Length: 598
Image (cartoon, rainbow, N blue to C red; front, top):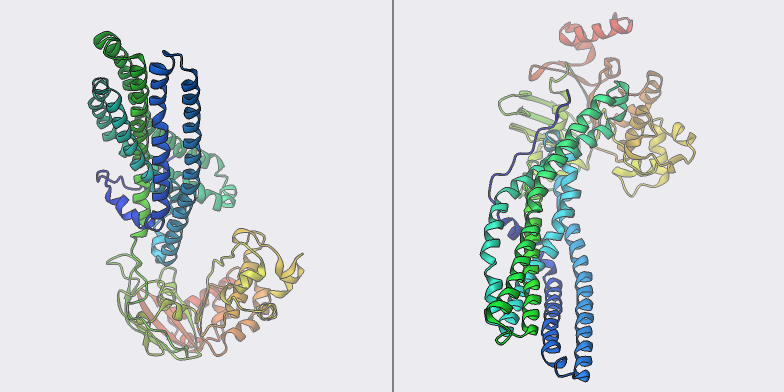
C-alpha cells in the first residue's frame, strides 16, 4: 500500500498575524517611493473614474430632458476622456508595480540563498531538498505580489470606498443608507469563512511541500528506481501524494470561492432594493431617474472594492502560510558561524591537535568521547575502523562543518573556533567519496577552488592525478559540458576531476575521505604517484576502505567505540596483533593476499 514517506510540516496554530507583514516590510522599504507614486496614480485613476456616474446623471436629468445636444455631446466626450485617463493611469501603475514585485522577489531569494549557504550540514541532513527548494522558488513567487500589489491595493481599495461613499452621499443620502444596510450582513458571512480558510491553505502548503520533496528525490534517484523495478510502487506513492494535494486544494478553494459569490449576491439584492426604495417608497417626485441610476452605479462600485478587499484578504490568507515558512527558514540558526571576534587564521603550517574532544550528532549520544591526539606538520594520518565509528566525524570537526560539544580543535596551536570559516576552509582540501560535479565544463569544475587558475595550471593538476588522458579523449576536451551532477561521467572520472580540483587549490591540510573508492585498481596504482605528490609537504588525513593504500602513512589510528583504540605505523600495529591486525588480515584474506611480512 502506498504511503507518505515524508514527515508533514507542522500546522501553525497561531492566528493570522499581521506582524509577519510588518516583518516583511524590510523588503518593501526600499521601494516605498515607487509604491507611493503608484498609489497616487491609482487614486487619481479611481477619482477620475468616479466622475462617470455624475456625468451620466447630468445627461439623464438635464441634457436629455432639455434636448441640449451640445451639452450631451460635451458630456459624452468628457465621459470618454475620463475612461482614457483612467486606463492610462492604470497602465503606468501596472508598470511600476511589476518592477517593484520582481525586485522584492530578487531581494527575498538573495537573502534566502545566502542564509542557506551558511546553514550547517545537519539542516540538510534533516530535510528533503525538495522542501527547501519549494520555499526558495514557489513560496517567494507567491508572497511577492502580496508584499507589493497587495499592500498597495489594500490602501487603494479603502480610499476607493471612502471616495465612493462621499460621492454617494453628495448624490442622495437616503438611497446611500440602503447600500450601507448590506455591510453588516456581509461582515457576518466573511467572519464565518475566515475561521476555516487559513488552516485549509496551510494544508495546501504542506501537501505541496511533500509532493515537491518526493518528486525531487525520485528525479535524482531515477536510476535506482529502475534498477530495483520500483516504478509502479513509486507511481502509486506519487499518485497518493498528488491526490492529497488535490484534496487539500479543493478544500481550501471551497472556502475561498465562497467570498465573491457572497459579495455578489448581497450586491444584487442591494441594487434591487435601491430601485424598490427609489421608485416605490420615495417616488419619482423626490428622487429622479438619474439619481437612482447614479446611486445604483455607485452601489455597484461600492461592492467592488469590498470584493477586491475580500480577494486580497484571500490572497493574504493563502500566502501568509508561505511567508511563515520563508521566515522559518530565515530564522533557522546558523550554528556554525564566525565568532563576533573571529580573526584570520594565519598561513597554515599543518600541526593539528584534538584536545579532549566530545561530539555527537544527537544530544546524549557521543560519536567521539574525550578524543585527544596531535598530528605534526606534513604527517599523513590514516583513520580506519568500523562503519559509524567516527572517522568522518573527525575530519568534519577539523573542517568545522560541525562544532564540538566540548574540548578544542587546534591548528598550529590556534583554536579553530576563534577564526573565520573562510580563512580556515580556504587552506584545506577535502575529497569526499561522493564527488560532486557542477553543471558546466570540466575546466570550470576543476577551477572551482581557484578561480584565477590558468588553463595550463588546470592541465598540470589533471596530469598529476591521471585525469588528463580521459579528458583529452573527450570531444571538446576541457571544454566538455558535463551536465548536472556530472551525468556524462563515470563515478571514477568524477573522482579524478575532484582530485584535480583539490590539488589545484593547493591546500595546506588535505582530507581524503574514501576518495579512491570508485577508481579501479589499475588507475589507482597509476594515481598513487600523483597522490604521493599531493601528500608531500601537507598534513593529510586519509580514510580508506582498502587498507593496502594506507600502509605508508606516518600514523594509522584505529577508531572504535568513540575513541582511538590503537595508533602507530602499519608495522607497529601489525606487530601488536590487535584490532588493526585483525582488520587487515581479514581484508587481505578476502583479496587472496599474503599477510606474512606485510
